Image (cartoon, rainbow, N blue to C red; front, side, top):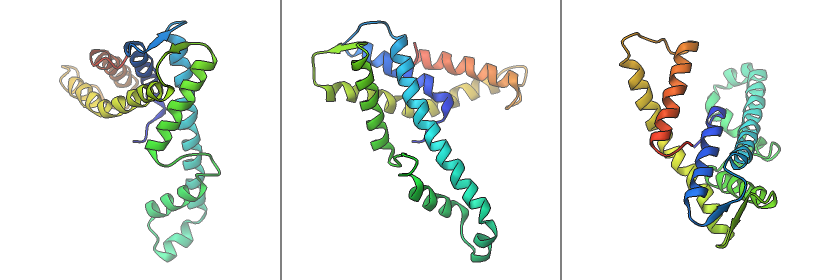
Length: 184
């Protein structure tokens, strides 16, 4: 599943919570450094994909006339070009492989910075991180629907896209994530 930049802090928080609650990891310097490291890797990964997609869009725009003449589907061409440029931008297109690699990078940095200690295999700890990401992905759409429904039930109607709507949405979104144990 493709994630957006605003989700990075929530995913990072979920990783820290799951490491803490695993019973297999000793947190040496609190959760905040773990959240910061995880968020950094996740944000960097998202930004790499955004950069790749921006370049693909530029190429498509440059060749719009040729595509129209040849009656080429823009979405299909987008995917083909993205696939071809992915290696150059160091983006793994398989989300399973990508998040597995992210989990490994996060764990390695946590261990090198002496933020965690564990006595079980590194692979099991990496799986805790990976599963935290997976659980977030499975729940975030449900949470967004719950929040949108709550906002729809407000007496005073809020217009999507307005600063007030965004502020209320973010507050309610974080509240729902806390209820589900996905946020500190």
